[in-house]
Length: 217
Image 1 (cartoon, rainbow, N blue to C red):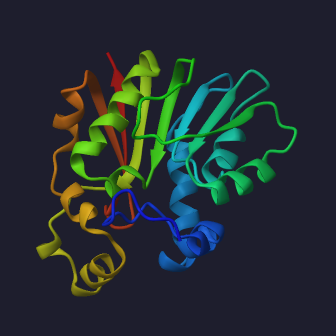
Image 2: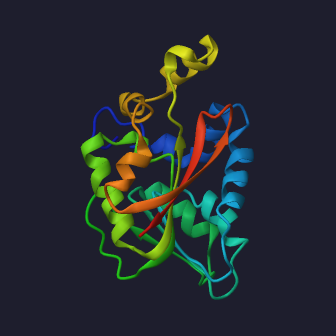
């Protein structure tokens, strides 16, 4: 197993988890992952010709759902550092020119010579130390057109002390320490500091999961 760059992170996956990521997510969410991901993608209001950047795209599961809303003029670029994810992603979209993949870190400056209509990140940003999240958000801002939309699908902001004991037990067992920091922060205020405005929220799974929508001004 490769050494983690961020030792306490839960988004840097070991090879077994990376190879079986979709199954792991289905089991870990008691089968609910599939449903709310599909709902979240529908809430993105994707236009047929949208140019979409998927940060930390994983196996391409989310891109497959987004692709259904695109015509021949639409396009999705997936970014991920995992070779195991890359293999699964490419297998899903063989010969589909509307999709491409770039193996790169999303917490370093991006070498992507394109500006996008929508940028999407799903259950990745909570797994970074907060100072590293800065680079991810800057990448999103710099690669969005003016008026473009940034979507963060991740945990909402909630007080763990008010959670039912079972929900709290599950969260404490499966999440890395950075997630506990993530849920305490005011993400609208944070994103405003980068130049994002006009926020909308969509909630799933007792409001523990949120799709946060914001616009580049």
